[in-house]
Image (cartoon, rainbow, N blue to C red; front, side, top):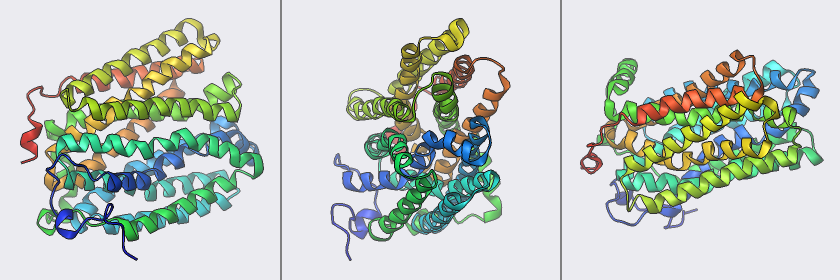
Length: 420
């Protein structure tokens, strides 16, 4: 079976970064489908958390620990796949990760023990994270910095459907089946990714661009990367901003379903509304990158997120759990929607100067995001206050720190020079 020409270019195209104005849109959308396994795995089972808690005989708050358990796998898995893909190419790690993901999904689907579930979720993440690492690096292999920002915006057309559809799809499964069926669906989606990898994903990392330094130097290479100011400010700043969203994911069930009594169906609609805002701004970002500097768009989005999180903080501080739900949802909406401007542009800047270690840079950036999510989850449990204030203060602190780092990026950074 041969892949369509629109998706699978010839070898000479695959081995050279695209310089023309035309983007390989079909290929980028396919990468988005591979990455979508991550948000699907995070969001689809959220409406099932209360039912899972009843099934295991524990509280919803306790079973919600399966969310940060997933984040732990994402942090460490990405740190492995990054240098591995820089050494052996982008294709082999995808096979390894997706096989691991399918096995872990089956474990989650068949267990009746909450601790096995936590372990299965961590293992699931160790497999799923390969998609994000490899696809970001593959885009960096082929595209220029401005094209990279546009490419990540295009990918969100696919990735953004996951948080829009996943909670509603999970709620639909719960109407007819048990929560176990959600993980069977995720296992099937992992198999689909294996098929896409086999027939449509080509190698983008040429032999001359592979990292041949000894494997024992991986730690020192990561340390060098963290000291590189062309990487650390956009990567850590963007990680803070994105990590705050994962804090919201961890807290959403308790906040919306337990505190405000939102049904599982309406919970899915709320998630979808936030995702629509995210997708809309990423698509607007494509148009804006032709008219404004990437750094200017990144800074504007960061300020938008900080302002919205400050509003949530004030609502929680002033009204607590009696805060008017529509205002709470509006603040959350702008916190999440702002990612449409910050994430594509922060990623493009962070990877722009990392030609020979794009996999490591992609991995470290992703790990930083989920490390923030884990740290934020710990912060949530440290504040003995109402759920609105707890989420508001955590998101405000993280997004403020992220915004400060974004504003420390050198305004004279020449991204065109990075493409040479």
